[in-house]
Image (tube, rainbow, N blue to C red; front, top):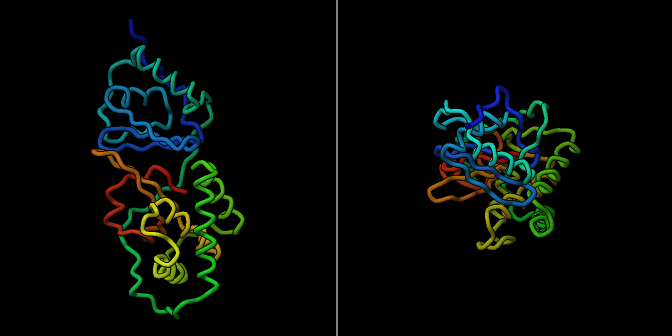
Length: 242
């Protein structure tokens, strides 16, 4: 006989796991191993009975009791370190505003040609981003970025004129420092490190989509997308926001 679903969730997502719902599915991101796990069908709905912070929007309501198969599957997630058995209330993460504006470099009023200090900072940021991607997991990179923001004494990410100016300067100089073959993740981390030298700390975002599955990374300050078109990133559902 199938066991009934527990009255209260017994688990929550581990601190290094992020999740979102996309097209009726749940996508998990394991930051320690840089991998994505897709969950669909009855498992995606039934897991909400067991996991406190399991995303449930857009999922079919699951009225049926959790089956032994679902219970076994949830146990496997726990054994894999993706879930933790703890009564601790899941931490609430800051929401990301909907992307509604793209940074326009043509609007830059303070363009003054090549500035060698900034050019050197971009080259350094490119090197640092490459080292991060080779030697650190996404969890390690996220922790480093969080530490940089805390160390600054401010975590403001308003799309100020200073942020627009520095980001526009980066975009204009980017072709001289970054190959067109570089991926969005490397570009985003380079921009974040460069802006940190200017004491500017926008948000690092990774989003996912399905049919077919794809992941994408960009940098965003509230509603303003800094290194992509906002129309493009809105095709992705944010799963990691730092």
